[in-house]
Length: 170
Length: 268
View (cartoon, rainbow over the protein chains, first blue to last red):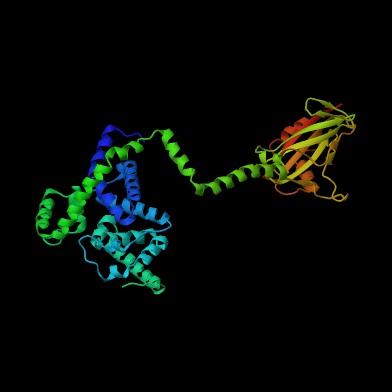
């Protein structure tokens, strides 16, 4: 890829502002330094390829969050074993609520293997990042009612999965 | 999106925007005020800032940008490296087997000429005289008992009727006999192909002048009656010279979508 000096400086500034946060989020999802760095690089590669198409260049955070989430989900889906642990449900600054306690590793693994990408994305924002539906709407551009539909669908599905489990946890 | 910052209602996303410098100065002030009272948000911001320092000690911008400043050669190497992964081996083996076996299979099973030809309808000929075979040319002069073998090119599956008119106006048809029986159908089925020999040959008689050989390519088989009726439109009570008839027939066809190709042979 040919990069002009001016564009390289632009990317350097963006890297300085956002890269550590993206890496921080990816570590929470992927639990692997190597994978998190790979995804961070992929996000910046995508940024460089599509920078001119991004409408609001002053507010890249939402774009970064979306792109890094989708990349992380792709990485997890390719892995044979997804190493979720209980810490995945520990969300900074938020108390675990009833719903989060009903999620366990087996359900998360099943979700990542079988669920559609959009649902997984919403679940990551809700249960791993701890964003509110309003925040998720801002990040994804979807309506809050649409987000609620995805969550409702997931809850229904996870109830079905839970009923077939032996090691169900509350 | 309107700001939803209220004194105690700061969202996680807003802390993250504050950290990445996306907030305006007014909003930044509000966040700073909030951080003074909220340990939860303060702790989160501290975690982000500490992670920021550690991250940039380990992952410099050069570590990101240098591998991405690739020459086309390096780009190719990246894809070649990806393709070397074991998961692609069965794919390559299958492709290799197909590349070897398919052309071999086609050569063994199919007549290549039927698949290679892409041109329009044409005829040419060879002829046999005194047990010797000669390439045919309309500039040659032919004689009694010369055996004309018509060779045709066809662009598709269709029907071919071969007939001739001599200088006396006698029309002769050259379809192969169906179980040794005469038939009203004078067309044979032909497939797409080039330089295909017509299944029967023309043996010239002693009548002098010309022999106008006509090949009629059509989508449906033709009856003798149809062809005679068609020819009748161009032949009148007056004697029509075969060269003139050839010119008249040029560009016409027995059926609307068919094609007529002619050869005018001069006889001694």
